[in-house]
Amino acid sequence: MLHEPRFLSAEQYLLVTLIVQLAGIAALSTMLVRFRRFRTLLLTERRDWPERVKFIGALGVPLAAGVGSRLLLGYAAADVSLGGAYLAGLVAGPYAGAIVGAMVGLTALAGGEWIALPLFVGCGFAGGGLREICPKDAIWHFSPFVLTGLFRYLWKLVRRLDVDWQMLLIAAPIALEVLRQVLGHRYGADRLFFFPANSAGMLGLTLLATTLTVAIPIKIWNLARVEHKLQEQEALLLEARIEALTSQINPHFLFNTLTSISSLIRTRPDTARMLINRLSGLLRRRLRAHDHFVSLRDELTAVDEYLDIECVRFGPSLRVDKDLDPATLDHVVPSMILQPLVENSIKHGLADKLGERLITLRSQRQGTVTVLEVIDNGIGIDEDRPARLPHGGIGLANVSERLRVIYGAQGRLAITSAPGQGTQVRLEIPDLLLPERRTA
Image 1 (cartoon, rainbow, N blue to C red):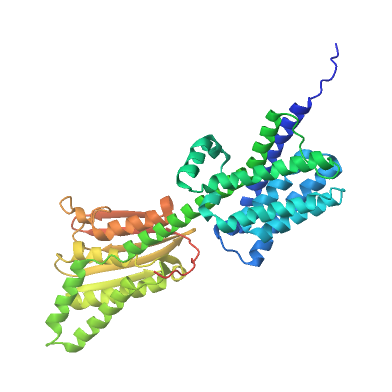
Image 2 (image 1 turned 180 degrees about the vertical axis):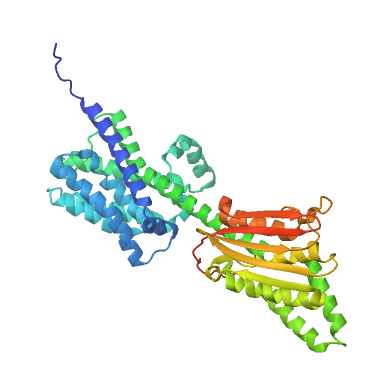
């Protein structure tokens, strides 16, 4: 049995149209904020004209297309001209708002709606004027839910003569929508498009929908701004953390080196002078490094400066062998990642060893990973010597933490040791593009 078709009443049609309109403006705002250049525009409060033109094009073209869709297809939910022009002025300034208002107004004017052009240009100027006089933070906290505290804000205004910017920002689109309703009823829908509200309830819904067409994009864009700022803060925190780890200096090494220099000043002044030069170069790398990442070749140069100092301290009993794959020398590694391992080997493995002391530096490629090894023939790791464990001493703990911070689970540090035979520390460093230089 066939049923007769049921059509929506005027109130139901208006309600559905307003809901679809809000869904459309939310979708448009979400699409725009996914573009990096548009997000960049939202981060700066003072924009030059090239940036304003980008914003005008990004927002004005879709809004004008929505007006065209209404005129050509009769799809009324696509038209958010009033809220869009006000929004453009509120975010980008009066001239940007006026231009967006002119874009949607001229499109409507092509359909014979001659009142639309001055009205929407005025909406853009209204949003831009409020932007010029109110605090910028108040704009990004725009929300229609502030109306729930209307009486409290009115009492605050009367008692303290304190202007609440949220109430003023919300009052503007409501007043503009009331003006559109008045002009629409006065001159007719063929001169100005509007959603006719024939009851108090429908008028209230229309005013709320107009306010939401401004509040929803601002809410979405503000969340993107906050997320971007949090990412910047995390990046700065990560950079500061890496900087702090890189700048750590083992005081024992510094004191021992200064003691060696003082003992050589009278007997071997040339050697003392060489040690001072090497020490100054090493400290300069530690304290005034501009790069968090360097090539393995440069990192080995820093290790050589340190080993030159230690070879003078220990004499011919300390020998260094290198087994380096030439393909790894240009690989990018964290700055000062090897020197703490070599220092740890000498301090905890070789310092108390009798006879020949040997350190071997080895590098090789394994797929997309560069493997670095620091091997010594020292006394090895003993249960009573926790400083040699990855999280026990300043050297290995520093390297382990830096690998975790920079590479996550991809960077690995492994230790193999046998008491009385020596220790092998193995680093696995994945490929990393050389980042932009940042000044500490």
